[in-house]
Amino acid sequence: MRLKYALTIADPKSAQIVAYQARSTGNSHLTKVDVMTALGMTQARHRGGLCLLYAKYTKDADAGRTALIELTKYARTQARKYVGKIPGRRGAITIRTLAMLALEEYCRTADTPGAKCRCGGSGEVCDRKETDRTGRLVIIPCKKCHGTGLRPISQTRAHHAIVALIPGVSRATWYRVWSRFYEALLAWCYSQESIAESEYQHITGMSELNKEIIAK
Image (cartoon, rainbow, N blue to C red):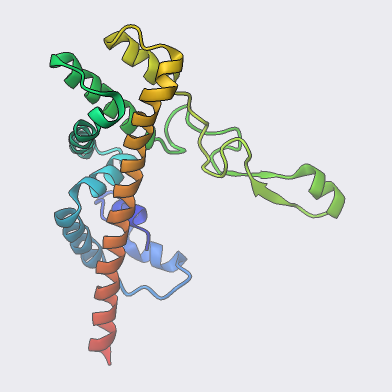
């Protein structure tokens, strides 16, 4: 079971896990207690990654605040590498602002207002030419969003936010310097998500293995 689905199953307002198991193509022996235990262990080991996922898929405000704190900490360690030293309080505000914007972009889903691509959020579209040629429906990844289901986002807003704090950051400077920093923060979010996913899969895999051994 993917971690993003486990987050919603563990939510008291969600459907019961049996509903997920009924739709599953494989044999799942996980109970709701197993899922919640695995989530607790994952959070203890990779707090930042799990908070990012909660913020993204459940829109949990507390998780969002924690994720922003963790991302801002990382941003502080990388700022000098990408943009040099920004003195004083302005530097701290600039770094936090960029982290906030990167987190906002990372947390977009098809449910986010205005985030859906023209494909409707599915990430797929009908290839009309091939459909007409073959006489059968041909589905291909959406070229606009590259299969993500999300409308491509411009960095113009982030650029304007930085200019408001540091006047003189031209468009060329943004793309040559600051954009790389922004992309690094986004990459960190996805890497932490991947780490948390791997840890969760490892924990739940061990849980299912132990149950199989006991059953034998």
